[in-house]
Length: 80
Image (tube, rainbow, N blue to C red):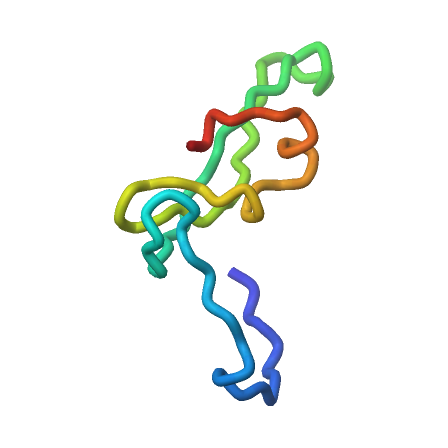
């Protein structure tokens, strides 16, 4: 895991992330899995691509803002 750069920002000047479904403020790391055809990857087997996301620790929802832009553009809602 990459270490975040040190910033001198007061927490009072920040805003919390809130779950779009249940308004919880605690999130855990998860992963969406995508499959890429062996014909696209040029390998002998299909590839599994993990995409890191944050999920609500209470209800499991993934806020749209946490989704990669490419998946948001596809309009997929399978992360709800």
